Length: 208
Image (cartoon, rainbow, N blue to C red; front, top):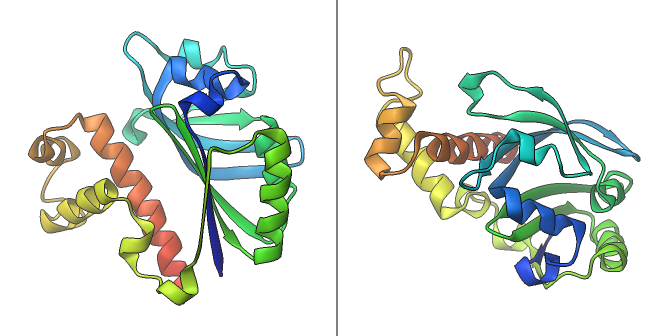
C-alpha cells in the first residue's frame, strides 16, 4: 500500500484562505469524519487556540461551520462542517484514506491507498493549492509497526498513560497528573493522547 504525505508551510498558505487558520489556532487535530459528501465533510476537530483567540474567532473562518461543542470531558472538541475546496476534492476521491493535521502554520495531508488513486488526487490538489513538499513511501515494504503511525509526542503520551495505569479499571492516574509528569497543559496532553488512541485503533484494525 502506498503512503503519500503532502504538506503546505506557512509561506505556501499565507495568501490563501487556509492562512486564516494561522491567526486563530496553533494546532488543529482532525479526530474523525462523521459524514462525507461532495459538498463537504462533517468532522470532529480539536483546536488549540492562539493566545487571545477562541471559538468565536474560529467561527469567522468561512469554510468551517461549528455545529456542536462536544462535552468538556472531550477536551474542547467540536463538530464542524468543513466545505474547503481541498476537503471537497478529497471527499470525491475513491480508494484512499486521508489523515489531516494542522500545526503551527503547516497543513499536512497523509494519504494511504491505491497508488493510482493517490496519484490522481495529488495531481488535482496541485491545481487547487500547489504543495510545498511531497513525500512518498511504500508502507508494506517498510513494515507497519505501531511506531510508524504515531508521532514521537503521541507515542510518549500513549506510553506514559499505559505505564501509569490510565487504562486500568478504575484508572490509576488522571489526565491532569499525566500532563504534570510531562510538564505540559492538560488540554495539550489530552489532545495528543486522543489522537494517539485513534491511530492505535486504526493500526490495530489493519492487522486483523
